[in-house]
Image (cartoon, rainbow, N blue to C red):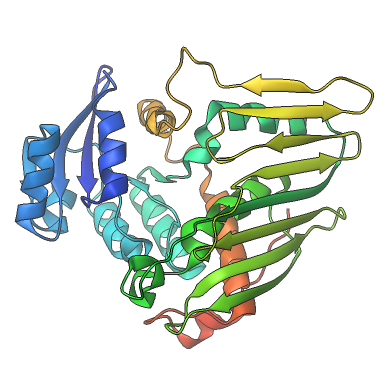
Length: 344
């Protein structure tokens, strides 16, 4: 790593890996120098597509590549513990896709590994790095709508997805919650911290994953958050934050918004929009820039996506899964027990 360039390795070659790499190669201070897949053919095809000099047919070779400053882990989340852990154990810095892991125990293991080796680790929660979402959080924190009373957020896809699809495969951590519900849950955490109590209901598939889930999160302040996710029905993918003196509405795509509207009591609505001169509102470059900023500053975690916050989100996801009765293959029996929440 130099002042001019950070060298990236890409672990996995699916759709999100391609989207992130396409944004990376457009950044002048980022170099994508290696890619790894479980098969050499897939790695080579990906490398040829993006002009990447080194392609590995196994994850270990990428983890051991000293010419890589940071590895982006883009596997399905059921493999995050293995893939990210391999890289961290080899001393690599890691940006790991969300959901961060299958459960909080795996997440705690990765955080412990990163801290043991003094390596940088961050969940790829790009919503937290989005400039407009950061602006919204500043407004809420500064009291623009008073004390937060309630949050509503949803993320649903219409499907239908066949049983063999990864979203319905228990072996890959399938279901609506970890793939889509992580966004509404993380949005509520961003503004209110970890909830003190959780109730939830779900409709499960024959395979045992959640087709749709609704949860009510509550805080000791009296605030409530209603979150919903689905892989059997397209939803508005919108969010709203209501306070004692106003409301903020975010239309479709709340986790990478192009605008939101602030309603304050006794005042005309104010619209805040994405800067058209900047990157597209759905750009993954914001999180890449944050990783590279942190690495150059010698930081081992990002203040925008802190590891304690990631662990808190995983505790909430575990608690919801406990309520709805979803357990994945290979999880220890006590991982189905209710996790201990740590209210903010």
